Image 1: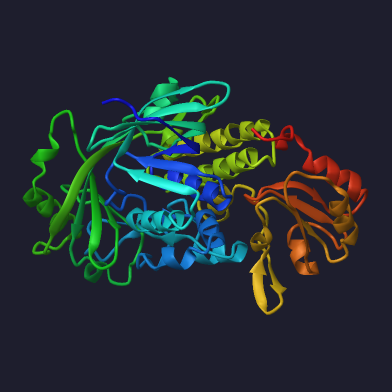
Image 2 (image 1 turned 45 degrees about the horizontal axis):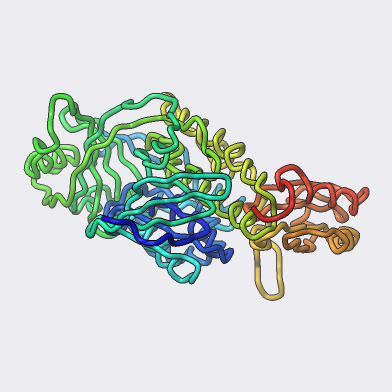
Length: 488
């Protein structure tokens, strides 16, 4: 069919998974118009990932979405995995899963990890995105092609039902379209690292397994039954679960796993011969630990599974995607809003590709999982320290003080920093907040010290004590990561 006239959007985001939704939300909250397209007719109906990390929950909390997200929280009492022969077996061993415990997280964050199926999280994100006039969402729309030049990206889209094509001219294109990314293929970017590390078949089903596990309410169960080994994962309210087991796709077909066969496997793994089971869906996937050779080519970026693939081990795949989507979103918004020059966008790959590569490689390693403080440090990734303080009648976190621009947090005697902030000329907001003594101490500064923080809670500079606030602050706000001033 003939293409229609050229439409315009500041940013086109391809893919409505967590990475794409978060990128589009971050842009929309900054007032930047974006077009989010998804080739499927709606969000995925499958639960997929369930571990929403502490850092991801901090972001959702900052958007006012924590309660809505936790409304879909799984009934999990303990962070960890339970390894046993069958669910009904009386004995088992608790294993770490790469996530810090609730109490450990609460000590360093205003929130904690949550067990929330992806098919609950994504609708919450989509509903939030649709509250912003700057955001447009089109389902059933696929990427046909794109071409970039020095001034922007020309994107050709097609409605899958009608075949009608639309040409969109955008300043930037974001590929958040998953492990088999068309955007990545269009860029010709290769993936490094192993593929097909393991082949797993999964079945989403309903069965009264909560009665079987009793008080042993974990987020994952490793089943060691000789004929039905695999994993059970609670995946929704009530009796919805996921069962996964290794299979040999080169010798078998997915169709060979009938509902009756899957029911037999699930009953054996549960240790309940007469367990009532209703199979809802089944599928198969390969484990991989790969990272794209680059996350950016000109005006086109890769985020989430398009940028790196991880095994489920450690539960960081979706959370890394969220972090990348947020980071790229605010940096694009700054550049498009004239708050920073295009050089700021170089920091996206520089900061996130090492994280994606490290986490992907770790997901393929054998041996014990990260746990406790190590797991929490990996998740928080050096963000600003959390401390509680009073603001009127409210108790707020230091993280709650961060604005869309830069934020200067000073000690209780930091008036010289406030004066310096007023004298520094910037293209972006520079907010100043004085902390009480304990909160300042938690951030590593004294009574007359200060910390300069980005909107993603990364610390740009920390001054334990005031020396030359005006000179120091001026140098920090013009540091390399901001690039040259002016719109992109």
